[in-house]
Image (cartoon, rainbow, N blue to C red):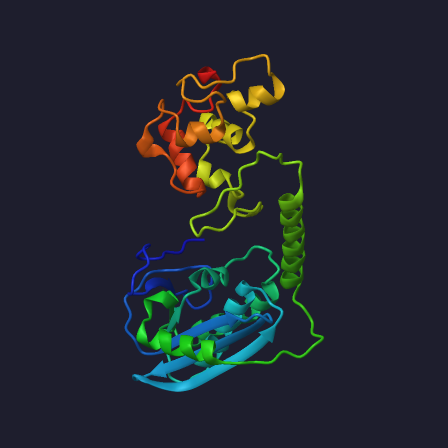
Length: 320
């Protein structure tokens, strides 16, 4: 299924997704030139008690004609985003005489999912909304809907208005309460991940010499399964760089410090002649064989990756 987002970069001017099926066919998306006649702005938020708040302001002729807000407990962000679109779009399509609807949202990906035909856990929410859109299109051949992407940080005035409403809203949850399937699955995954990270932090199996890096926000990096893991996306997928980084991180490298522990009969001094024992710290921070300007100034992982990229002979077997 084709869809377009123009432009691709985030800017204060919202990006565009236009849905204009030919009355009966929800699967077609076409670009058309239309004008503002109705603005629909929505925003969702999930608080610390997993209470999702969705709000929508429906505008016409430069004034708000409806303000809507709903709450839901124990749902995932994508469910909250879909709930927000549903909250505003359904009432907007029911307004007499409206042919063109503009949805200002920071959830353009969810808007595109409404038109997906593949099986997914959110079908019970997508199908009623898609059915309502089909009904809206069948009423008049001029009817169409446009979704404009507008991130909250852009602070576009009308979107900021509904955004501020959501942030200021308060809802006290009632317990016990049901959980959505996706929320239950996410909670179980989060619990497993937390257990894994706790075990990793306390375990000695990673080795006494394991180097705990920090990310750009100066937080100790923890293992994760998301987005390619914690270390590989930063290192890249060059085999030699990945191998050298692994040796440096674990301390299992062809350096004097390692030989002193496992092969004490072999030389342990650094070839530069400035260290009796060639330690990891000496190689990275002191050794004159490497460019001083490339030395890391902190424990952030990116600094060490750049050091290895600029000094490929470090921690390499050819460097013996």
